Image 1 (cartoon, rainbow, N blue to C red):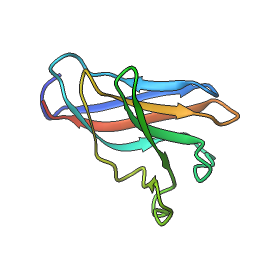
Image 2 (cartoon, rainbow, N blue to C red):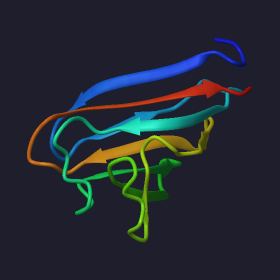
Image 3 (tube, one colour):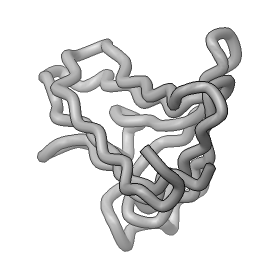
Image 4 (cartoon, one colour):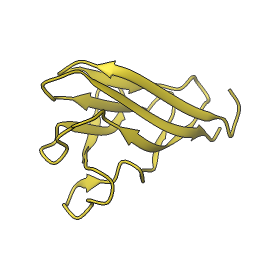
Length: 109
């Protein structure tokens, strides 16, 4: 892949499982939108995204577009998550069902 290429990944994530994306060494990606499947109850923290370096995880809950008035909750269509080979994208499904979780972004380096 080259700088400017679109990066899209989708996976069916079972309950209690994680979806992680780690670019190749020397590659950096800007993730701009994230999705957690249909009928996801996002207000109670059932879908979260963030960074993971293998040990330390930082996450934030996601809510439907336009509903960004609650503290600590972000709009899934308006995120800026920079990831590289060391600090990668991480999402978690703690719903009671398998969900199609995905993200899209662009390679910046």
